[in-house]
Amino acid sequence: MTLSEAIQSSSDADYIEDEGGKYDGEDFENLSISFSSFSSASFSSAVFRGAVFTDVVFDSCDFSNADFSSASFHSVKFVSCRFTGSVFLSARLKKVEIDNATGLYTSFDNASFSNCRIMHSDFRDSSFSSISHTKLEITDTNLSRASLRGTRLSGLSLRGTTLDGITLSENMKELKGALLDISQALAIIRTKGADIS
Image (cartoon, rainbow, N blue to C red; front, side, top):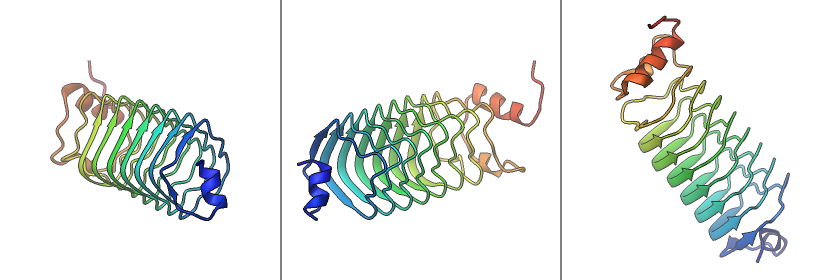
């Protein structure tokens, strides 16, 4: 069964195996998708506001400009997916893995992360402002010029992550208790106009 067939039959989108599906611009608001896998599917500009994802794998899918506002994710994997311009405003993510993703200009503002990992990805010029997190790891990921305003860095694993030009609050309160390596600390200092030789 494809996602389109599930919607047309007004049934929950469960146990779907979809390869190469085209869902650009489709409206999946408040849809529940469980125990499914999607490969090389395109969801560009699709709407997933309030949707619920449980035990789902997305491999090499395109979510450019998709809207996941207030969506919930539990035990979900995104592998080699594209998120450029997508929005996860106030989304809830638990046991989510994002690996080898491209997500320039993505917004995770006010999202909550629990036991999540973002790895080997590119989220330059994106926003992680005012997120809440428990056991969130962001490793070997490019966060250059990303906004982390209002997000505490204490307890956040940032091993191997690039922080050049990130945006913080004026008093840099986000840094209290943060564990950073030397290159990350220097990158943050440079954002305040310091000339380090």
